[in-house]
Length: 324
Length: 189
Image (cartoon, rainbow over all chains, first blue to last red; front, side, top):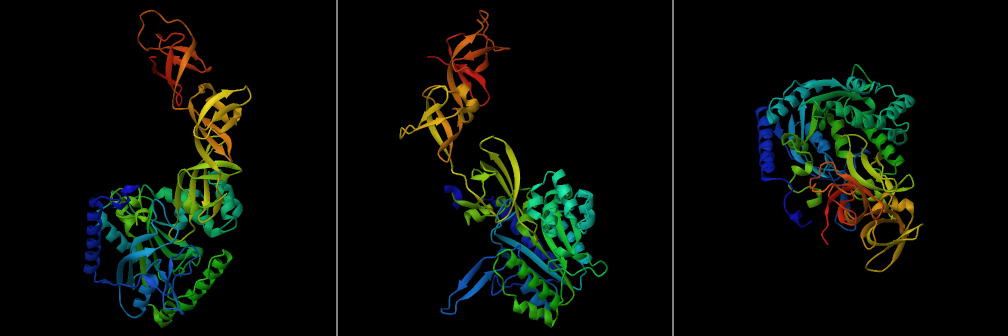
């Protein structure tokens, strides 16, 4: 296609993006949250087996060094928090290899922020404030629902009580029988499959929905809930059923974090993926002490997409992957 | 045959699925932020024409199907096979009744059809979108009726039956849309 030198989106979307960024900066300035910058090119990356990264070689032969494009600014920002930065935010690019589709571009814009001494609930309230500021008040109230409740309502299944037979029966009766062979006895994958196909779609009617209390097996970097160890203090933000962001009451226990890294690396090995060096700087920062805080990352391209009522990310990015 | 990763899936790609050659119609990449990525794909089975939905784990790879589309000229039928020729190379192919299927009622010598070849053997034959065929049999129409209203059945030289306006007579050439099986117009010689 000879037209690929041109931007994929209109000037109007570029103007809206500029305005959105200015509004975000004003929002945080008013709340005295400091804007920071951290490296995109990092010496370490996450162990998450679900995130594939880009790596590159820094030339200093014969001791060349592998560097990684960040999949999120989380580790570096937590180092700042541990060093006493106070509440911070960042607008930056993140990179995820192999992720391309209507809602995915391998390079995308992230807004990530951390609030010292905020609980998950307080951060959820701030997310509502920000989204209302950016999108204007929605036609209805914010729909806050626990993962367990929304999962049960949509499917009748209990996401915390895994029974392969019952899940498979549900899949066969609900037109997603491929899940049976793909997910097997992998509880977490079953949850991803059923949530993506059958639960998320029930959120499409809400201009803003927040799902909190993810199962502990999907805790990622969130703390386990103090009252119910089956769930983690993790939440996700959905606008019209589109996943916009993911937040945590942040895990600060260095040895628990290291344990999760090791588990993820074992999982990588099982899947035949390369084992990743644990980020030493990050673990040292946790040892030094991460203050109690909650943090969240929002996908800005997706946010712009819902602001514009666009059908695909390509409609709001000047040069998406195929034109990059 | 080459293998394709789900990351390469896009409309038009031909892959093997349940031992049959299939064409991808649509691929949707699905990934919860912190979870497993899937490819949800709509696929047409090129043998049966049936459309199915399948989900793959992202990063899985599947066997490609050696399937190509080729323009070919229809030559003749010997009763068992229908014979076609590639105009540029004069290479000939014989298609059986499974491959020709419903296209048979539109096939006229010399017409250029689209043949799908799987492993170099005819899989399906698609007639041209428009064909011009002579009317072999139809009720004589009422004199002076020039409107379309209602129409009447007409059997064409290839055996196809289409509804035509009342004024169309035996021996006349008509133009038919093979995708809908509908009469388009008379053809002036």
